[in-house]
Length: 79
Image 1 (cartoon, helix red, strand yellow):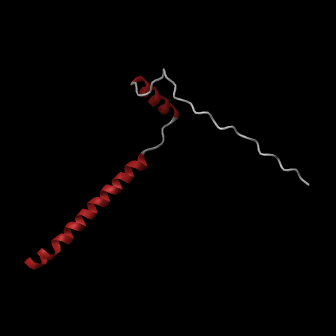
Image 2 (tube, rainbow, N blue to C red; image 1 turned 90 degrees about the horizontal axis):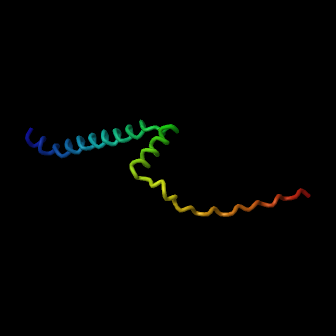
Image 3 (tube, rainbow, N blue to C red; image 1 turned 30 degrees about the horizontal axis):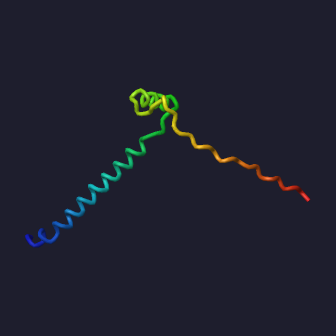
């Protein structure tokens, strides 16, 4: 009996650690699945809160990059 326990205790330890890791991964996936996109009123409230905390400076606009000019494709004529 003593030899059997000495042989299989590492296997039991690995099985327990694998089960704990599986539960941890499943718990993380479940917490991500519960997070839904914010509604429009919540987004504006979060933006207002960020501005009031000073995370976003409303006095200095962000640098704007110019958009590339869009050229119209020529319409092929029917022959």
